[in-house]
Image 1 (tube, rainbow, N blue to C red):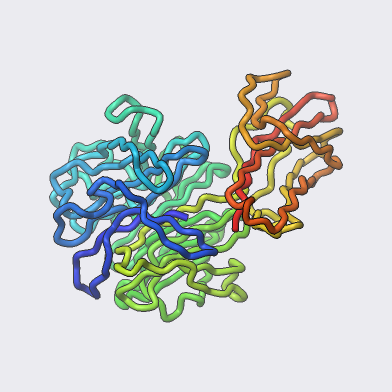
Image 2 (cartoon, rainbow, N blue to C red; image 1 turned 135 degrees about the vertical axis):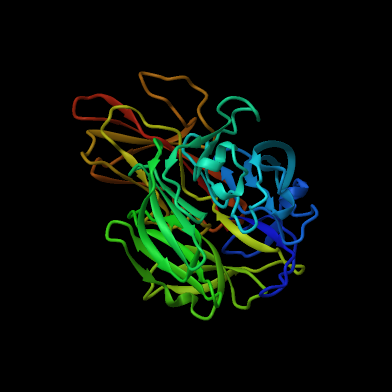
Length: 448
C-alpha cells in the first residue's frame, strides 16, 4: 500500500508530528518505509505556516510510476504541481512536474487536488476543488480533470479539465469513479455539512446532489464492486471519525460503529481480492494509524491497526492506494463471449505462501466450448496472432472445464523463496460459433 501525507504546522486542535511525503507498507506485515528522493513540495519541506505535502499518491499499474500532488498554503500565488515520479525500488530516480494552475489568494481552506484514481488506460482522474485556483485558470471551472502521464508537461492534452456544471458551492474533497456505470461520485463539504454528487463520466455534465451528510466533513470515497460507496468523514465540531456505506440508488447510508471513539478519519481504500476496508484515523487527536476492517460489514467487521507512524511520525496520511494481487491487465480480444477474471473479490483469497487452495476465478455469461489457461513469468512480445492479443509468454498450459464459472488452480507451497514471484495468466477459448477469444491478462504476486 501507499499513503500520501502532508506536513501539519498548526497546533489546533492538536499538533501532529512528522513530515509529509509518500510511504509504503505491507498491511499484513506493518513495516512502514518512506519513498526517498521526493521533491521538496511533496515532502512538505518548503516554507509554510500551516500545511504542505502530498494529499494523495497513486501507482500507475504495471509501471514504476507514482503520481502525487503537493499542496499547502505556501503555494498561494504560485503554480500548484502534480508530479509523476519514476521509482527504482523505493528511490525516486526521475520526476515530471505538471502545473495545474495558479493558486488564488482566497484558497485558504480549499482542498487543492484532494484525491486521484488511475484509469484503465493509465491516465489519472483528479478531483478538483475549483476554489483553489485564481479566476481564469482552467481548473477554476470544474471538479474533475484528467492527467495523461504519457504526455510531456505543458503539451496539448497532458492535463484536461472535465466539464462540470453547475459547480456546487463548497469545497471538493473526495472522489470515486465507477467506469461501468459511467459516473464519478464527488464529495463536497460546506461549513456544517457535506454533500455527495454524481457527475457523468467521461462526458462530464451536470453535478446532481445525491445525499447530504449533516455535521460532517467528507474526506474520502471508495467504490465497492456492488456499486455502493464507502465514505470517510469526521464531525465538524468534535472531530469524531465516521465511516459510512452509502447506497446512491436509494440515497441512504449505514454507519460503521467500529470507528466509535476515534478521531479524524482521513481516507478509505478497498482491497479488491478480499474486500477488506482500510481507513486512516486516530486513536488520539495527534496521531494517525492505518486500520483494517474485515469483513467489510458494520455488524461483524473487526477493526485492527495494520500500520502505525514511524518514530518521528508521518504527518497526516491523507490518501491510500493499494497494489492489488491478483490484478488484471491488458484487454480481451477476439470473441465477444465475455470471459472475464473474477478478482474482486477473489474467492480463494490472497496468493500468500502456504495457500495450497489458491486459484484464479473466471466468469462467462455463456460457457465457452473450450478454454485453456496459459501461465508464464513474462509478458508476451508477440503481435496479434489469429486476431488475438497474446499477453503471456506461456510456460504451462492448463485445459479448463468449460462453464459459466471456471477456476485456474495455482497452489502456493510454503516457501519463502517464492515471495515476490510474479505469475501471469491468460485464458484462450472458443465460443459456440468456434470463434477464438482471449481474456485480459492477470498478474499474481506471491505474498509473505
